[in-house]
Length: 144
Image 1 (tube, rainbow, N blue to C red):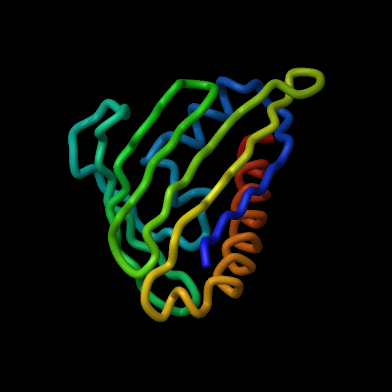
Image 2: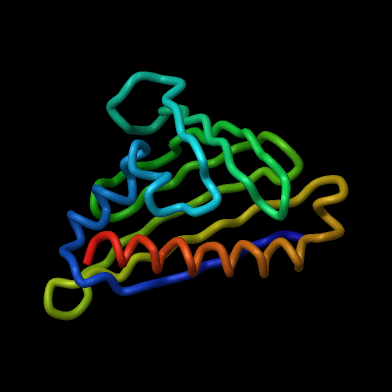
C-alpha cells in the first residue's frame, strides 16, 4: 500500500526566509525532531544531484539513509528522494505566499513500503502525519 502524506502550515515570515531555512541541511536537526544528524555526501552548494546522509529515529528504530536532491527551485519547490531501506520515499517541500508577508509551506512524504513495512503502511502514514505536524510547528516556532 502506497503512503502519501501531505501537511501544511502558515508561517508569519516571507517565503524566501522560510524556504532558505527549511532547505538548509545544516539546520535540519533544529526543526525535525526525529532527525539526529545530517551530513553532506557531495560538496555544497545544494542543488539537483546533491546527496545528503540522514540519521533518524522513527517508530523506535534507528534509520540511516541517503537522500538525493531531485529538484530545487529556491523559494518555490524542493524535492529529494531515497531508494534505500524498507521504505523508499520522496519528500517535497513547496512554498506559497500567504496573507501579510506570511508563507504557506507544504511538506509531502510519499513512498511505497517494501517487506514488513508494507503491512504497516497505514500505521506509518499516521505516524508520518503526526511527526510532520510537530516538525512544521517547530519550524514555525523557530522562524516566528
